[in-house]
Length: 296
Ligand SMILES: Nc1ncnc2c1ncn2[C@@H]1O[C@H](COP(=O)(O)OP(=O)(O)OP(=O)(O)O)[C@@H](O)[C@H]1O
Picture 1: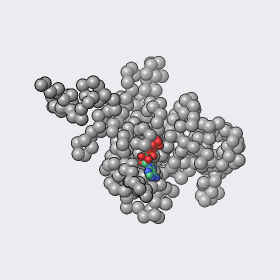
Picture 2: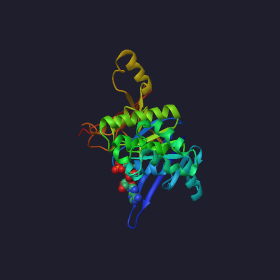
Picture 3: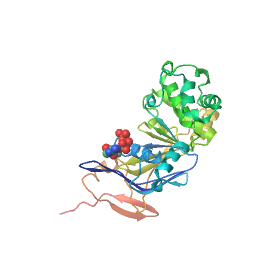
Picture 4: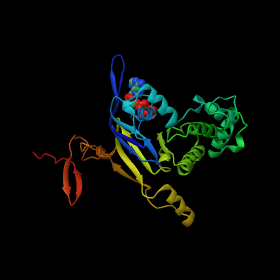
């Protein structure tokens, strides 16, 4: 679904240039449910804006659903936003109208679709588990329910890719979990590809793959040992989930063979005050040693 190679985004302001993405590689399969994590300023929102067609990359390659986003005309972009992607934001007040009911809020963006809009809006609200709240005004709904309405709207144009920017940022843990479970259900039932950008480590437990971004590049990936669905099955069968860490962490190697050592590893005493490591191949393993201390 997503193929990004060496993606670069440079923001130019009057005095300075900020390189927000510096050669980012990211591949996402059709039907994946994955998360992107990273510290503030690492480039997550920039990437999401590129994927959503809200802003244009400066260089590199970016294909979504087989479409080359770097060669898009303005018209292509408008069409892409209408037909291929859906968005969910943390702050759903941005796309919801408080004095309308849940049903009216979902009907509104599909007005142009003609007579079936009420049926379609009801279908969408059912898909997000809100059939019992159709006639409630937005300001009568909880934060989690409002977020479900936002998700229903994002699904209205049947996007192939759903992009969620901190979708649980404003919710408590229990409600966050429910929203994440909903993403998983929609992913399973509709086969829609979902990319969630987050600070929230909890999300990692709910998806099969987490890609970490550091300084505008993918630095590491955490992949589940057992898929979340299998883990739930096991939980039901045996009353216990798989033991140990749920994910394996991989450092990502770029095309030039560069990799980032996971944060914290180089804080170890023997590596600390050096900008070099000794690299050796031993029995099929690549081993990093601290540099040898000079003896004088
Ligand atoms: N419109 C812009 N103009 C100039 N610089 C920008 C612009 N948008 C983002 N940046 C810069 O690009 C870098 C990446 O920002 P981005 O918002 O993508 O990070 P982020 O990982 O989403 O952070 P956060 O988690 O805080 O939202 C930052 O240094 C930021 O200051």
